[in-house]
Amino acid sequence: MSIVVRDVREHELDSVLALNNAAGPSILPLDSARLRHFHDSADYFRVAERDGTLAGFLVGFGSRRGHDGSNFRWFAERHPDFMYIDRVVVASRRRGGGVGRTLYADIQGYAEVRYPVLACEVFIEHDSDTARIFHGSFGFREVGQHVMPDTGIRASMLTKDLCSYPWVREHYGDDLPDVRWLAQPRPLGEARLATGTR
Image 1 (cartoon, rainbow, N blue to C red):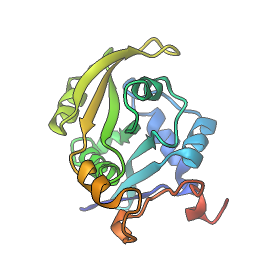
Image 2 (cartoon, rainbow, N blue to C red; image 1 turned 60 degrees about the vertical axis):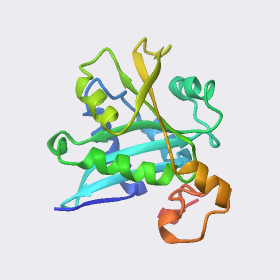
Image 3 (tube, rainbow, N blue to C red; image 1 turned 135 degrees about the vertical axis):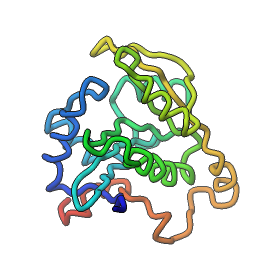
Image 4 (cartoon, rainbow, N blue to C red; image 1 turned 90 degrees about the horizontal axis):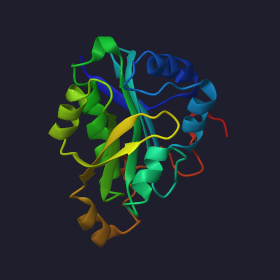
């Protein structure tokens, strides 16, 4: 069956939280307040559905909006403009079925017309060979390592240059055409409008 990627809905946050906290040691746990902060402030917070069921999600922050995590700050010290993947989680029963690849293709499509670099990290302490191969197959490369001060976890810091960005920037600047497929899924200051609340 097909995979559908769409913006998260507010009533799904409990399900997203459970999915995150069941993901294992390669994903930092969340509490409901932190997840609410992500919902209210992330540039990109989308879920993947397969067969009508939540199969995964991805949260991302652009450098222009900012983020309070130490890994984000590490990238911000080295790149003036980038899109940061804070976390991607795929339900254990859906791993290996294309959900992660679909989410990464979607965020790349969002980022490549807005940012020159896509950034993320993989924790080194855990069995990360699968994650490293996954990211390498998408063109990410390690640009350094960082020990997260709040957890002591060492992360491999990865970036990918987005080759479409220079052309889009030269021809359109910040004034992208008003077409549905280019629409920003979570406009600045309007992250909760999709649910009818402010």
